[in-house]
Length: 363
Image 1 (spheres, rainbow, N blue to C red):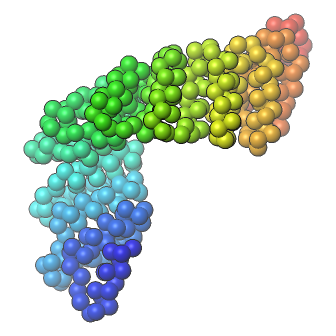
Image 2 (image 1 turned 60 degrees about the vertical axis):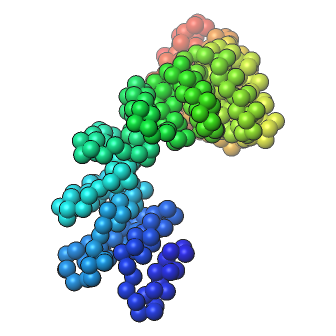
Image 3 (image 1 turned 45 degrees about the vertical axis):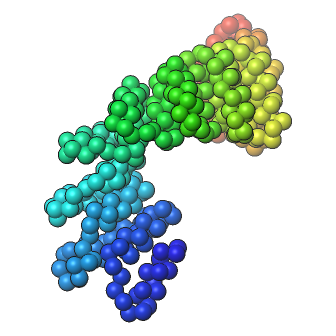
């Protein structure tokens, strides 16, 4: 806002704002989420200036101008517009720098063009530009979207070899790539490296490492990380609690999952749909149909809408407990709740009826 006020005061005094003034204003707008206004300023001042060739030389765009405009595109996921600006930049003979490429890679990644993001990164290196922490972080983030954890780790090592110190965001992106691939060991290794390098992990990093452990069936490391996070003074949020519950659920540790669910409530953290569903799944898989049914009822009492997955777990538990009629009732409730039953739902109900000799009900 301060940058915009200065710009207005300059214009009010009858003076012509310089390129530096406009660059600062565009940057301020972008940082505050007003990327559309930043791009509008670029179009009205710089693009028009370039087309008409009537403004002073000081108002012609430079590397900072284009980099800032491409950053605005990145904020809005406008990857095509960002690429067009880059090509326009080249056509005008303006050299891009690390920040230009970082913004361009981010724009492609946020626009869902992950392969294009890597092309841009490779183009940067082909131009002899080493890159900086932002370009490498953007490239690693693209690896996360692809689930290519090995390439993410390779990029992390490459930036270190080039003397670029990874920051929290770079490590977070690499750990998330490992988490998506259920690669717990590399994720744990990266967390340890962060600690050694005095980079304090945030709750997102801790949750991602716990999720990686949970997916790999390693509930004990997940539990240790949860406790470490608390010792570091971080307050677990609903995502962290849900992630630990899921780790216990996947390992068949239903009582531990339920204990964490209860601790979450005592801590004043309101369970969400994921937390409830994971707790329900943990109890259902252990045949604890009363507990899973109770959690489903509490979930609804908390004004949360269970999906077919939650219903399926409870119906399956009821089936194994010989409660086929309750399973049929739940199927009816699911439809009344406007939750869409899936093939698994009907198969579970049919199996429940069949296992209990109720073939007519199944048909």
